[in-house]
Length: 109
Image (cartoon, rainbow, N blue to C red; front, side, top):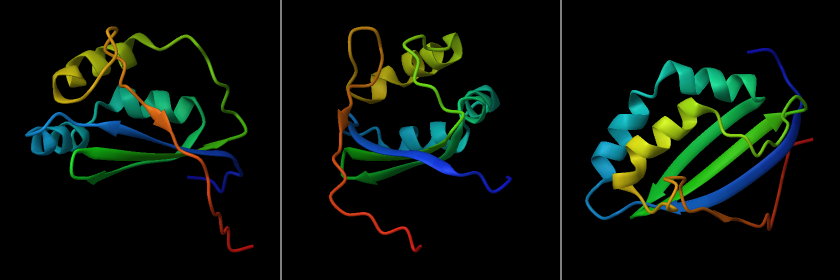
């Protein structure tokens, strides 16, 4: 990957339903190539998911090509629907998310 300038950092939490930790990890270990292409196309530089118990911590960095859109790609909806039995979701299968506030940031510059 070329050295892209980070324009946005964001983090949020989601919750797994108990007992789904292993299958959630397996699904992400085998993420669809189409999902990765969508992330790349949308300017995602880094996308990390960490787990603590049933709490998922998501961290994303995007470059200046990232544009927030209300329109969700049909592939993403399909992924969310597949993942819905494993985690807490809204009625439309999108994950329930809670944004996190940045409390400290060190960039090394």
